[in-house]
Amino acid sequence: MRLVHIGFGKTGTTTLQNNIFPNICKQLQIPYLEYETYYEKNNFKKIDCSPLEGRNFKPLPKNFIMSSESLIGEKWQMREMVGAFEINKLFFDKECQILIVIRKPSDIFNSIYIQNIHNFNIVKEENFFINKDEKNLNEEDRNKFNLKDFSFKKIIDLYKSHYKKVIVIKYENLDNFKFISELVPKNKTLNNVYLKGKFSRRFNKSFSKLGVKIFFILNKFFNLENLQIWVEKKITPNPKKLHHKIKNKLLAQLNLRNKIHNIDSLNIFYSKYQIKLKNLPIDVEKLDKEYKNITF
Image 1 (cartoon, rainbow, N blue to C red):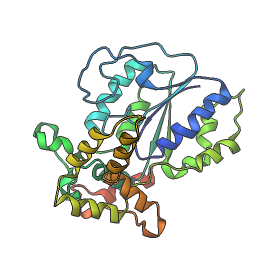
Image 2 (cartoon, helix red, strand yellow; image 1 turned 90 degrees about the vertical axis):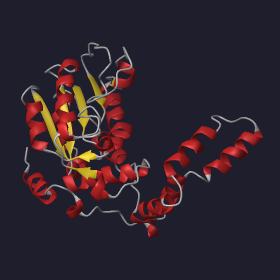
Image 3 (cartoon, rainbow, N blue to C red; image 1 turned 135 degrees about the horizontal axis):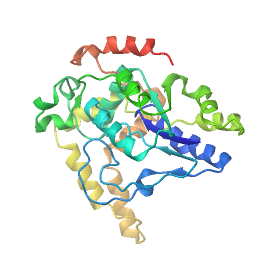
């Protein structure tokens, strides 16, 4: 097995990385590789399309699994994804199996927007999503999500034009584990019952409708991003002295992200935030219909 899972983000990646891929590697006795430690940095080049930029090439072992949602493109925008494909060709040979997990576009855009709020870029959805040619982008647009020419099909076709085997899974079908049988050599077997038990645990619950609303209200009175930066700077790592421990506990009360997650963990208050598709500058419903018709 020579598997490179390249994305997309917001498609169960954390569960795959924490619970599934390491256990497959353990059962098959093959290495689970992380690009950050496997490929050494050779400079401090600013990342444009791919996290592999500025890293040294290194031959891959005969069998392995590697997974990173940013390998398909740093921020999952079309220009970056096309550029990342060219870089991936240099690092991963044609014999590598490429795994891509896709999700209904409206759901991905929704998750991307909530993550943006979570990271303290607190901007209304109609101002966050743009539809611009690359030549027309300005500095302010760098913190926004460009929907220009977004297409799963184009990216999938691009990888299929180069790699011998490209496996594409829809997010809603991820836990049926049919894709595992496509990956495992015919002379190998896996304990899928064990893996399914591992898959039942989900990670990264997104902010609720209430959480997003609280962030917008509080941000009117003071800059939440600056507050978070200040808190993180003041916290003492691995405190041993009592006064440092007390200080850290007090500062933790100002960590608004954790506060929101604590509120959301009480399911009686949880209502998932949903972006209004009419606020987006492209026809997302059309993309959703195209997604529904994608078959493999």
